[in-house]
Length: 248
Ligand SMILES: [Zn+2]
Image (cartoon, rainbow, N blue to C red; front, top):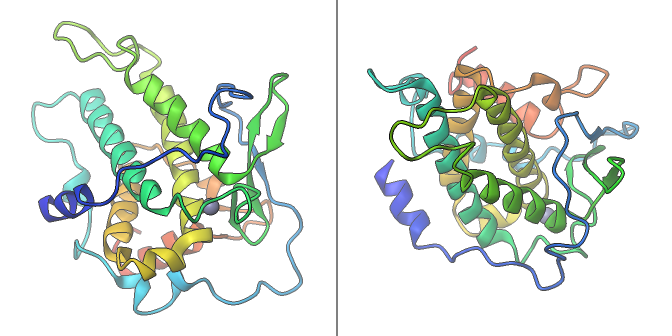
């Protein structure tokens, strides 16, 4: 994956949108679902480009991700999960940095991830509210940066153990990174294609999904509507399973 990291490293660093409030209205994300599915439209509309050939199979890594996600021998599982979440966060942040000019309050007034799928964020009274996608993503990324810097959650010094609650925190982090992927696929895949970074982006997301499956971080409910239908990237994950990119 070194080629992947090198080419991502050359991309522009993420920047904050000047129209996005960075402090006002920020509250910790809730572990509860916070998903609004709305009502399904009578016709689902055109097929998303990320499900179409040849884009659906564009990837830097061919074959299964099973070996990439398995922890190396003698490495503590918490340590392995922590390192990988850290990498996913940074790599995703690079992609978001490239797409941030397109993810604006005007273009993305909601954190949408499918025709009727919208992610919600808790307000001051823990009521789940709809936010513009750039605000939502800024909240996720700021919250995550704070967590990753917190020595009591992600211990970096030798002799310090991971907290008992680490598995729970990892699941929570994974869910929010997943939502950022879901929005970028749904709302910005055309730009991803325009920038010719779809192979990088697909590889990162397939790696992320395979990792979530290996460590039981992926909450399948996030991919399904209450009617049991895959929506947005849920369909992509399904397609990749059919193609053998992901384990069945
Ligand atoms: Zn957006």
